[in-house]
Amino acid sequence: MGKIVGMEVGIAAAEAVGLCNIDVAAVYPITPQSHIAEHLSDIVHDGRIDAEFITVESEHSSISACAGASATGARAYTATSSQGLMLMHEILPIVSAMRLPVVMGNANRAISGPLNIWNDHTDIMPQRDNGWIVMHAENGQEVIDMTIQSFKIAEHPDIMLPTVLNMDGFQLTHMIEPLEFPLQEEVNAFLPDRVPFATLHPDNPLSMGCFNMPDIFMETMKAKDVALLNSKKTIVKIWNEWGKMFGRYYKPVETYKNKGAETLILTMGSMGETASVAVDELRKAGQSVGLVKIRLWRPFPLEELRAAIKGCKTLVVMDRAVSFGGAGGPVGTEIKSLMFHDQDRPRIVDFIMGLGGRDVKVEDFIAMVERAAKKKDETYEYYGVRE
Amino acid sequence: MIEIRWHGRGGQGAVTSVELLALAAIEEGKYAQGFPAFGPERRGAPVMAYNRVSDKPIKIRSGIYDPDVVVVLDPSLVGLVNVTEGLKPDGLLIINTSKTAPAIREQLKYKGKLATVDATHIAREELGVPIANTTMLGAVMKTTKVLKLASLDEPIKERFGKIADRNKNALKRAYDDVKLAK
Image 1 (cartoon, rainbow over the protein chains, first blue to last red):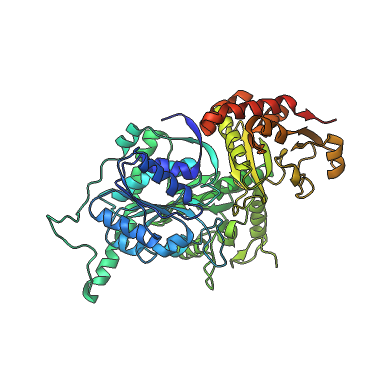
Image 2 (cartoon, rainbow over the protein chains, first blue to last red; image 1 turned 135 degrees about the vertical axis):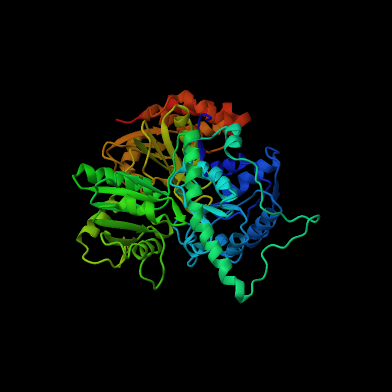
């Protein structure tokens, strides 16, 4: 590994992509992702890597360009945020259906309206059902590591699916913090060249992403679902391989002081670190509280979550998005649904919080744990809203 | 852990200050964060930026509300923005001003620890511009002892290239000139 450096995490994300021997980047800038777009463009322009940076006119085009490039066998990267991800929406399920291993970074930001450039998870949630592998990073180091891992995961012959790595906008992208980069030769040893299953080439014509009649469409959809579900075991294998090489181990569900805890906080993304400080404070006050953090959101790691929360009485879910008119936040609703048949499942209390950059402090996590203890039912609540 | 809040105006380089301080701290082997108050960038409008520096890994990713140190880059912000808001009772306020400490105390009704330096004057002489962000870093190093002055050398060289030495001179002058008020 290289030495510890101080760097803004958005810049570091671009540097990490620069280590991955990409062929094509097609990135349209949008706050708070812009520093990734700008810096990756610098890396290509300065000749530090031999890649094509396509200056597209929109995110619809950036993801389409990546799909096309990927279909020719190229290693393709894009990054976006919020409205940009929404504009990509139409193309996202096509990329996964074509089994194209495009890698994306998403700087999580609220979706309009009203216009808001700050962090929450409302941009990624509407993209939940597109057949992509969806992961969340908790800090800058994880952004570097998981960006590199993403290419290996996406391109693995047992997976061949696109990946999106979520990094909280501003909270992560604009934070200068200590980071460690693997050396180029270490990345080369970890990440082999892509070996595509099939490629578009004029000498060997073939069709991709064809039309499906009703007699085959359902089979295609099931195959995509199975492929995504099956990807988990290979993702875990790749994470273990990373751990052995670099000493930092990644799991679909991360835990902190969860063993024997009566109450568990559940988070995704950068709020996990602040929540861990709340856990320490609550433990000091004699409370039996721990933390579980979902790193892999699609495919959903149900077995790992079950194991992580076994024996806990109350699960306090932090939802940084709203499913308007639904049964709760996307994470809380999903966990309740997945655990419906579990006899000894905990009481699941779902808070919608931290929307559009509303800061979530240590004392907020403590307050939500206290509120959850008093709450009689499992209906969802907004935390911190002025009435 | 020490938490620092910087007040400046958009374009005066408050974000550069937190960046340089964080890089210097990391260079020293400490843990550090540097981040802006996330918001739309508006030239001339009051802005804030933040640092955390610690000997241990920093886990908190929320904003800073009760800083140990407040640094004011622009004298005109005093009285306009509540610069002492949330400052810990034993916290330190460092102001770029040509006024005397008693005058500042009177204006802010502030009795806590106070350090003053005329960083704009120094910046004009050393850099030819009234932008005091790097200059004020010198005052911060002297009064907080959060880092060694020399740890800023490399980040400043990297950031300013040809004009690094002029920035270092300005910073050194503020380091020598800053006065802790009674």
